[in-house]
Length: 330
Image 1 (cartoon, rainbow, N blue to C red):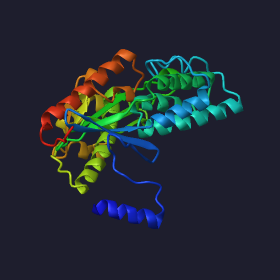
Image 2: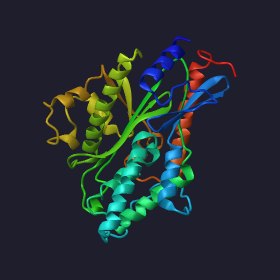
Image 3: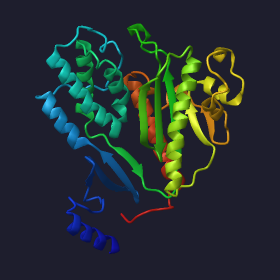
Image 4: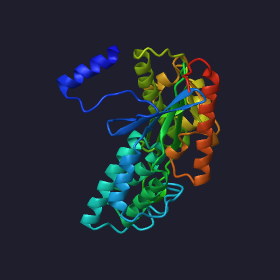
């Protein structure tokens, strides 16, 4: 009652657009994202989506539609299939489309983040291949527009942090820099992710993994500080999952192994932070279960499906772990 009185008063004074609680019958729109709620087996499940905006975007730019595809980018062959530069008007259109897609990829569509960033690397001089790759991403969105980020409301918090790198994945196209992929989950829901090119060329796959791990540590640490300020207890050290032994060996050994000799200056503070086992523990995970994999390279539909199944497994584990601690009437 106190909350309702407060918001009604605020609405009268500040002319708020709207306010209200998220219920199964009443979704809310906040910052162009729809927040909805369902109840399954007595547990509330919240969803975050940009479905309406994505459908409007596709309607505006795809006209009569297209045949949906099962992956936003199965390989880079399409992106580099035709290097003929676009005409100025077409180039401007490609840049506008990538701007829209980047917004979706940043806010709710982690599944297209890697593909969008790879295409965005060609925005300085878009090509015919660039436009083909953009159209494919849009065709993928056509079949997955209703996709949502979902999380169960339970009394407890589980964190899962994944990092991966693709060593010089674009070297055949003249770019020797590696790519970093980071995926952070809370109770099985993606809440932070990114796919970015590393600033310098890594001399080996081990070096690329260490650079990616450093970026992940930075991202994780910031989110853990925010969590602590929000009153969420954090059990240190937190685990960071990698699919390369180089990162694990690097944390366990203060001296760099043979692959890294002469690559990193061990006096740098960020390298010393990676060795601090009191804050972070690097754990090996199989590549087939590394949810950051699609953020570093194109993956075929079967790989994407397998990773979705791994995400569902984590969600189920969260519910089974905290089941009964917080439930609502159906």
